[in-house]
Structures are given as structure tokens and as C-alpha cells.
Image 1 (spheres, helix red, strand yellow):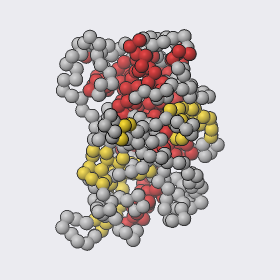
Image 2 (cartoon, helix red, strand yellow; image 1 turned 60 degrees about the horizontal axis):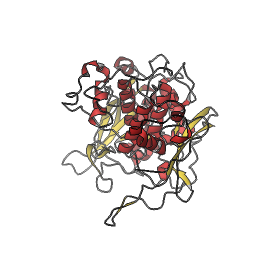
Image 3 (tube, one colour; image 1 turned 180 degrees about the vertical axis):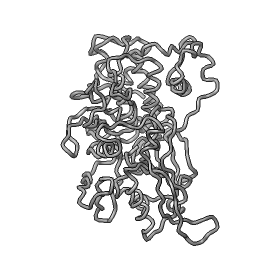
Image 4 (cartoon, one colour; image 1 turned 120 degrees about the horizontal axis):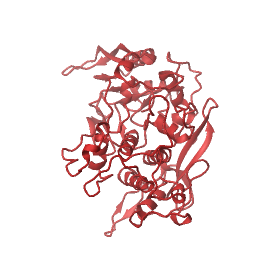
Length: 476
């Protein structure tokens, strides 16, 4: 996937440029890959200002990780007005924290000047890809370390992350060694970024560009937003999420890929002003449009308006510190029982049933109101399964799933499947036209959750992953 290298990154962030403009060049065997990383707006001109063989510090590496995340998801990524770290005010660790890529040491430290080891990089990259929604469940292959002579040096917490990188050809050993404790070079970071994009990103028509812009959220608090756009061949700049896939023509004349004309951005739907009231949690109730429908927001939209930050503060308080143990999370959960319509196997008529699950105490009354509204709706959508809070171990990405915070609900999970970009699937199907257990975007279940400020996995992300069973308060 070759493209022309163009200067693109502005203001406080990244300015992409050709390699020859600066004093240092990568090794000959890495030149094409580093150019590719620049071409896809994954690394900055700082790479040309410092030797590529130098170790990369954590601050510079998380800059790369956030750009991987933003480019793969095709989403703009915003910082939060509340800074979770006491040792850096840089926007990129802030973005990475709220995107679920990093968590710090639990005491507010990010250690920006520290160099990052190869095994630490494996954790950050898998966390980045997991947060981007392109990873399904992962189980290391049985022989993944068979040819790695120094596998014994890999720390126990890092073994699954290293295994993932090896299994997915994102990293490899060198002459039988992985060297987990060696520092990552700037050249190596660029190579990994490029491999991640090639494996999980979209090849679009046009030149990907990046810009970091200063602005304010809906409450006037200063934030920074990393914007991803595409410069088309006609000079028009459009949002990366709207860019058509590259159209290729095979030697036989077959056209492969491409989506035709790009989608043109329309005027944004105004954010709800709360005039329709507030939920018990303090969340503004969304106002319906002229057709009586509620906006199905994406996570990036809630980040840009500051809505995501407000939600984080409602759940975790002003400090925004998330739960780190099952005991801590349990103390913030409440069991609820809600009415539902059910259609047991063999039955021909709906009947009243009850579902019991745990949810974050902050959201208890909201959730009861949501299910009461769904139950009292004229369409009476039947609900078979509701899964709420459940403490789970970190997945391959390293970050804890939102289930651990009691802020998501998975409903009718067999008939509203989750399909990752990789093709991995949880559940059997999604067919709202033919199954009364599948949720249509305009149906009572999706619309009622949207009214109360929740996002729906059927449209919340633009990473290629869809999760029709998933209703999320925080947006993850």
C-alpha cells in the first residue's frame, strides 16, 4: 500500500514529512516501513530529528499509540478536561487514558520520560487494538514460545501480550531471542505502528492527515482533539471515517474495493440541552427529533462535546479513578429486578417476566426507568437475556472491560451478535426484520436507551466492529 508522503500534522501534535528533510534516516531495511508509517499519519517529524536507533520514551510512544488508535478507528480522539496524571499535562497520555489504552500506576503517574521495553510495548499495542475494537477473544497458541530461547525472561504479566504479538506477526524473535527487557527503538516503534495499520486499518483513497486542535467542551473546559482527515485527489478534505476505500483494478479488469462517492458531512444534530429533563443519575434526557427519534451517538461525538467526561465523573467522581479490584467494584454495584416481556419456547403469546442483574449504583434508577419504558411501549419487545456487571480479567488488550464497572448491559446476546473486524463472532445472528429478539435502530429498546444517554454497539464505533447486544453508558 504505497502512497505519496505529504506534510500534514499541525499545531501541538504531529507534522508528517518526508524522511529526507531531516538529519537522520532509518536503516536501509526499515526505510519503506517507516515511510509507510509516515504516509498513514502514524508517526511525526520528530523521527527525523532524532536517531532512529535511539530508545523511545513513553511519552513519544503513547503519541504513536494514540495515532494508531485514531487511524484504525477513523475517529477523532479528544482529551479530557480532567488530567488523570500528575507528572505530565501532555494531551496524548490523557487521550490514551480515556480511550482505555493505559491506566498509569494507579497513583497518577505516567512516567513520560521513561523508556519503554519490548514487553511493555506489547501490552500497550494490544491495549490499543483492543480499545479500537478490532480484537476478539484471544488465546495464545500452544507453541508460541517454542522457538524463543529467552521466553523465561518474559514477565508473567506480559506473556499473553507477547504471545499475541508473536501469533499475529506483529513482532518476531531475532535469532531465537525476543529480548523482552530491551528498550524499544524509535525505528521499531514506527515499524510496529505500520504493521498494525496494515493488519487492522483501512486503505483509503487519498492522503491521511492529522491535526491536533485546541478547543473547549460543552462546559467551556479546554480540551485537545486529534482529527483524522483525508486529502482526496481533487484536493477536497473529508473526515477519515467518510473516506471511500481504495479502488483497485486487477490485471483481469476486476474492480475490487471502493465505496463510490464519499459520504458528505451534514449539519450536526444539536446536542441535547437537558430541557426534556434529567435522569436520576443527572444525565440529561435526550430530546427527540421531528420524527420522534433519538440520536444514536458515536463515542467520538460524546468525547468531542464533553459528554463522555461528564459521564466518567458521574460514575467515578471528580478524580476519575476507576475500580482496580473486584472488591472495590462490588461495593459500587446494586442488584435490580426489572419487568420484561418474554416469549418462552413454544408459546404464542407474550407474557410478563422479570430479569435480575447488577448495575452500577449511580445508574440503578436510570436502568429501572429504561426497562419500565420498554415494558410499557406499544411494541412490547421481548427480552430473553440481560447481562450486567461481572468482574472479568483483562483481555488481550490489557484494559479492563466496561462490564467491570457496571456501566454496560448485553441484551438478547444470541440474536444480536457481536462481530469483530477480524471476523470473530459472539452470538448467532442479527436480523431485526425477521426476529422479534433482534433490536432495530428505531425500535423501542435502542431508542429508549438513547433517550437516557446510553450508546448502542450497533453504531457507537467506526472501527469495523459491531455489537448489537451492547448498550453502554460510557461509550465503550
